Amino acid sequence: MDILIVGSGGREHAIAASAAKSRRVNKIYCAPGNAGIAQIAECVPVGAMEFDALAAFAKEKKIDFTIIGMDDPLVGGITDVFKAEGLKVFGPDKKAAVLEGSKAFSKDLMKKYNIPTAAYETFDDPQDALAYLKTADMPVVLKADGLALGKGVLICHTQAEAEAGVKTIMEDKKFGAAGNRMVVEEFLTGREVSVLSFADGKTIRIMSSAQDHKRAEDGDLGPNTGGMGTFSPSPFYTAQVDEFCRKYIYQPTLDAMAAEGRPFTGVIFFGLMLTENGPKVLEYNARFGDPEAQVVLPRMKNDIIDVMEACVEGRLEEMELEFEDQAAVCVVLASDGYPVSYEKGFAISGLEAFEGKEDYACFHAGTALKDGQIVTNGGRVLGVTAKGSDLKQARSKAYEAVQWVSFENKYMRHDIGKAIDDAADET
Ligand code: AMP
Ligand code: GLY
Image (cartoon, rainbow, N blue to C red; front, side, top):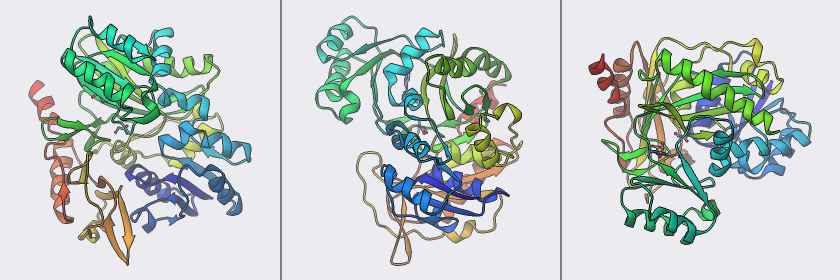
């Protein structure tokens, strides 16, 4: 079959790489794609938010299956447009994607259906938020209601910081309309883990766990980013945690969405905090994580198209997911200054070193082709992934491979997967 992938990041490159391995895929198109994706797919210069143009392209090329990688088009209703045109598409429709698109919606859902999460209040008026914060315990977490590239969350340690945060989100509108409403949440402590799943509206299948590193700098310092690196599986995601989450979080979430008349088909990403009082949901996303996809998908043994098609056709119950025993680590190579401000357009060299090496992959995030040369074109530039017999080996291989690539202003964290050592110490 011929498929179309919508998006342009490392996640979409990882999806394309998995699809390229599918025995069922003939040709892959990607809109708009990037310079790395262009090596395995035909990139089409149509933006991810141009729903009508994308659907027209899919019809013209007789695309058999479309995969939506990104959150913005999903929340904006791209799936509905494709479905209305009779096209087969993987990803939640607009009314289900609200699970990610509105934090107020997801918090209310969890409260109504007793899904463990941090205590919270929602505000439409900054004055009400300020009045509430005067008596709130610190630290406190402020979240813009809508999509904000993973950056609309402020952790405030003092009253003054919280007041400034309300101004940033609700008055200065730093995250745009996402800040018309705001959720104020109890601060949770513990280990974070990302769990991705496939869902067909009724049945949910859990993928192998992963851990992200959201902060820009080593030691979990600096501002929040889209993610600076990941590893999979997480040693902190034990069988006991898994059992709890299956019973109280995963299926209950899917059932809650169905009960609300919003059956969810696609990928549900559970952002969890493993607290002293058990796992709690920090957030839901309605798509693969980025860079979680870069460590989870390379370990998945199933044909990704078989699984996605089963979701779309409501047959996921027939499927069991299988993952390699090998571990994977992904280190993001970013442009120095990300996520605040950075330069683009620098030549990237050394990429050919990854060719023919089974245990390694270099997923492109922000890259472009300029006069025949691959150049940097974003904050997160590349995701260097290595697989190994265990996390420690995967990590040392990933940190060896990051040296193969060069570009001006190359920046990375040096402690991706350092938590693995803590896990070893605890046992
Ligand atoms: P979110 O986009 O909601 O996942 O938030 C981004 C990051 O902020 C999370 O990955 C956590 O590191 C942190 N965070 C979010 N909510 C909380 C919370 N209630 N307590 C502590 N940290 C949080
Ligand atoms: N890495 C976190 C996310 O994709 O939202």
